[in-house]
Image: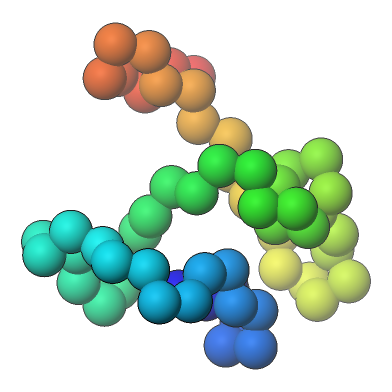
Length: 60
């Protein structure tokens, strides 16, 4: 599993559910530099979005 760029490895040898396919979006909590508070704009890639989920529903 990689970040936005292929050299950014987030996890290796991870078993994912069978219904996860290439191109799907995954939520990964607290990933160091990928976390919002540590995000940097040096690559011109915007900061990651923040989505709050409560009782299975996304809140703005």
